[in-house]
Length: 289
Image: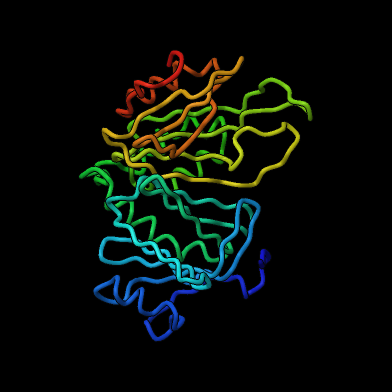
């Protein structure tokens, strides 16, 4: 498994069926009415996982993930309307995209140099699941700048990344959790890393490090962004309670899409955010929300 910056790890756009490996052609041909937007991700390994050579395809309102080296061939095609969440992550030269669907998830890992090639998959998913009018021109750049003034003063990275991702989408609600110390573990002091939740246009956006609970002296350069449609099937479930924080899960049909720790002193603000975002509390939630 290659995991460095070598050209052999770079993804590439595949422009025709003739350029696809022979063992994959029939699967892609039968699954799309015309040749889809297709990216080949070579075999790659990073700190958060690894995947073999994979074709990621987009067309006819669906995404296809085809493992080119698997025997027998492993191929998954799922409509955008049936994807429960999309996740992208980056740490230095390692990046990934993860699709959550039907209580399953599948990930493709790739060299960060080629992140722009995967933007079309994210854009297609958001476009298909956003509320009507979520990108209305009535939200000016001045409105967005004013909205993020508070976060800019607290944590600059959560001003920069969200504004790049949201574009002209003005948040309807947000919840910022600062870095917070929690009980020591055997190997030293631990913290909840800072993170940001945003609701905009009927989607829940999460911005965080890959490991939200970490040791205080550890260094983490990752950024994970999650896109979760908000509808009546999305609920919040409190799954565990510690002395100084609770573990909260955003779930759909009993499948966890995102788990986050919420410091005790931030519980009320977190609950308000969920209410403003129309995310209800699961009846099975343990303890008090």
